[in-house]
Image (cartoon, rainbow, N blue to C red):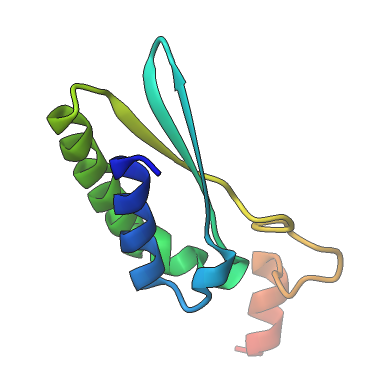
Length: 104
């Protein structure tokens, strides 16, 4: 296993509640190294962090590891299956419906 993969594996598994579901794929092309991360849907928030700060920090650290090895390293975090889709019958309401519910 490459050093950058070991590093990412350690960081991510330290953050999540289901480390057994962490999957890292590493590909190399003319643009550099692309690491693709898959985690459990329930752990996505921990990896992304508030306003994406945790993901930004992980990407910054990976770039430092890449510079040490003379490589450009990028991280792609895959959205889990069924993530961020609005389902039928969801609880989101229009502004008018919400105002009617308040009965002001």
